[in-house]
Length: 122
Image 1 (cartoon, rainbow, N blue to C red):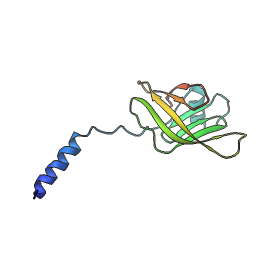
Image 2 (cartoon, rainbow, N blue to C red):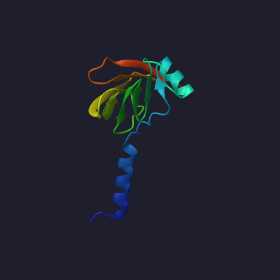
Image 3 (cartoon, one colour):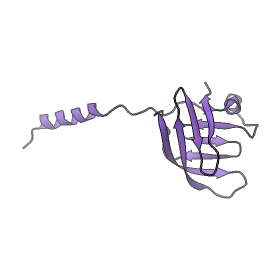
Image 4 (tube, rainbow, N blue to C red):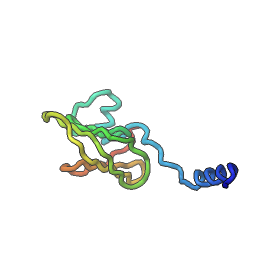
C-alpha cells in the first residue's frame, strides 16, 4: 500500500513539472482605426478591427470565442460563434489567431483574408 506522503510527493512533483500556462490576453488589440474606436467608445469606419480575449470584432461583424485567447506564441485555433451584418443568425467557425511576437497578432476567419497586424491599444 502506498503511503499518503508518497502520494502527496508524487502529486507535488507532477504539479511543479508542468510549465506555467500562458496568461489570458489582457486589453484590446487592433489596427489604428480599431484602437481609436476603443478610445472613443464607438466604431465609425469599415476598417475597424479589435481583438480581445473573448473575440474579434470588425465593423458590422465579429466572432465570440468559446474559450479565452491566451498570450501563447504561435497559432491558436478557437471555436467561435460568428455573426455578420445583413445575415440572419450565427455560424460556428474555427478562427485562427496567431501571436507573431512583440505584441502583434493576426486573425484568420474562414473565407476572409488574414486580418492584421493587430497591436496593443494601450
